[in-house]
Image (cartoon, rainbow, N blue to C red; front, side, top):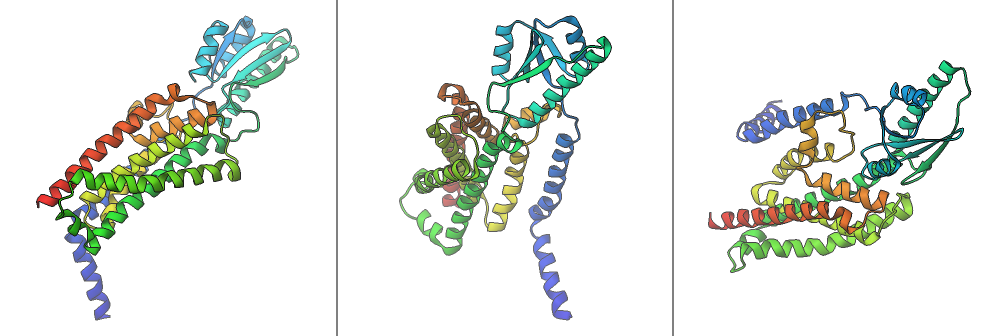
Length: 343
């Protein structure tokens, strides 16, 4: 029993000498639970409908179940393409034509349910029959599921996490084995060292991205409405962000455990704000914060290409932001290795 207590005391002393670990144990769970509460503690937003040349009784009825606006057809089409609304509603004789955005099956179901509820209210008030409902899709189809909408986000998240761990752990392993110290005393410059890691991991990442995308599209069945080369480019860009961030973290961390600690602090909040959860009714600061994270921009670009068939001009802004992160993390990682060399 004495040996058991002695071993336990040794563990406690290790924690007492590493206050950062103790802080991580307390701060990270609280931060994650707080984010969950802020995101999941809100109700789903009312569907946004654009009504085109609809009679007043229909407008009144739908206003009770959705957020409606009366606009021209051309303006409604622009709003739907920009995802500012969830559906366009027009009345063609006795047929109510509803064109939904279509990429998010949950939003589509909630939108159609709100419209049907409004129609029932109108029919009850006028004691008439319900108009026939015709549903068309701007993107996707009625066969798409909620997982299809989340699929591109999961692709980005998994590649980001795995590349981060691989890059971070590889450098820690080299440091433990003494390889890193031997490299740092050679004439190689810090930026050349980081660039070499990026080139080596970059080739592996391209192969990984190609295999993962082939499996998710061909075997799992994720939809892809766009150019597969753009999907690979976006995935590779997101992986390069993760790689340079992993190199930066590994330059700051001394042990593998510290890499995991920093991953929990730097990656988990990004995952929660990447687009898995609807932030429409969440606090405004959460939407702003999510735009400061690379995973969000990568996920938006993947959704744009895979679900909406976006071209390079439409996702160019997201790609530019990702490569801005890559350059920033590359520079910081080079400086961290330079500082380690001078110590």
